[in-house]
Image (tube, rainbow, N blue to C red; front, side):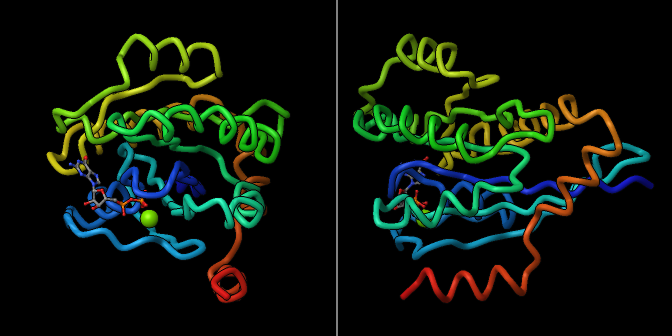
Length: 203
Ligand code: GDP
Ligand code: MG
């Protein structure tokens, strides 16, 4: 059995639904009350990907608050994939995806030097107050190097598993060689050092 270890980061403005997305994906739960993420948090999920492969995902939930952006840059390192999320009812959360994508491309690259695969998620599409149009999202996604974009509703459990499946698939397809996978494992941060950093970033 081959095991792939993947560090994935989820980024986007505060309150767009990042923590809810990860909790839905990992624990199949949703809570309507909002608790801001302080600094960074992280969850694991193991997927039986095929008969011969398992994927061990380390999903890093980065705070959307501006004061944590410099800290977040450190956490981009060693990531093999990224979820960039905005809220379709909040146009500024969409506009700020540009800066976040540029930051990500500057900090996280594959061993080949190429940008890491990034999926753009248009969340809260269950809400009638939607203002960001599909056309503008598609254009932004195409112009800024996302391999795809999807509408999601974490509340209604729409496209959560599908989005993560697409991301893992893309990571595997751009990481064909065993050597590359090994070197990215070396870059991923272990739990102990993560805890130390988390304490620092919370104060
Ligand atoms: P984060 O700051 O990006 O981690 O955002 P949270 O995951 O904490 O979510 C912020 C708020 O949005 C919470 O009150 C969630 O319940 C709510 N929320 C998250 N996803 C959705 C969604 O798809 N639809 C709706 N209607 N609310 C959502
Ligand atoms: Mg959060």
